[in-house]
Length: 440
Ligand code: SF4
Ligand code: SF4
Image (tube, rainbow, N blue to C red; front, side, top):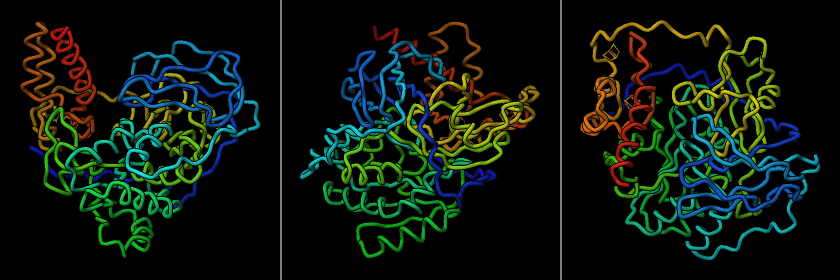
């Protein structure tokens, strides 16, 4: 059972009125091969090789994967193992910048005359979804072309506290958003509607895009309540259409394809310039950041460089998150880089990072009442206490743990501060492992 959701979180969007600020070129960038959902990319450069801005350094590996390009000019210094913040590992390419930011001479705008050309061009650009897990955008475009789709949704909801990068794209890059929408309309004519979904707390963005697209009968700007997790893919589809994306299925299975609004703006920019997806804007904020700002930086720039640019108080740094406070994951090393799908770097001071005392569950049911997907997180806790892995897997499957979208609402409302979302993630990983071992 889906619910519209009713969590009203403090917005803390301190950077909503700030244009982005460009960081100076870092000395090195680190490019992990796994920066999105799908198979890790395959390095195609060698140590010692000279690269330019936009040189492809890793090839997509398989159907759901994305190419990676150098965001700086310089020398490939290292290709080695890298431990990601989520505990998984992959290869990473380290590039030492020469400070010149020389553009690869082979870069030219792609020639696009058909939907297939558009897919191929976006695949070459290395773009992945910028609002969440980072599903390769070319795969979404393919779904929009090949499946029966009646609605394309451009997601400008941006419901997590602090984060304002999509808001700024819709204001400072409104023309690119509009041109991206027109591109989709031109090359993917099937869907009857293109809906741009924006939360009501972004009036400037609503005004800008309305002014640019009001004469297009196919485009509708839908203003939504500022309720968390309004921008989560499955929740937004439900709130706009009443359709439920079943567990294990994609939005295209219920007639929708969703693109993040900044991804749409990038598509337009890429078709005009040919410059691949190598720079990223992230919101840098939190109680340990003295100068919150939206920072545009080469992908692969270290958290340390980003936090230094925003004048973080390193002496009072407690916790650094990739992403917002609801769905973000903790970074364990400040020398780790920002990724293609990093939307924010939130740094909390020591006092705000202290572990909170947890109490036993009082069976109040708030976690169940506030789950937008209609799940029972306490059932996952009970299941994880079962020692037999097959019995555990059976109970987790029955309780639909794989439908959990990691939104964090259950943990947020729990008066006993139970670590519910953490347990959900462990439970999902545990179930997937058991299912995989059965299939082998
Ligand atoms: S994180 Fe909690 S509230 Fe969110 S979908 Fe999962 S169980 Fe439901
Ligand atoms: S919200 Fe917390 S205390 Fe209430 S039922 Fe859920 S886990 Fe128990």
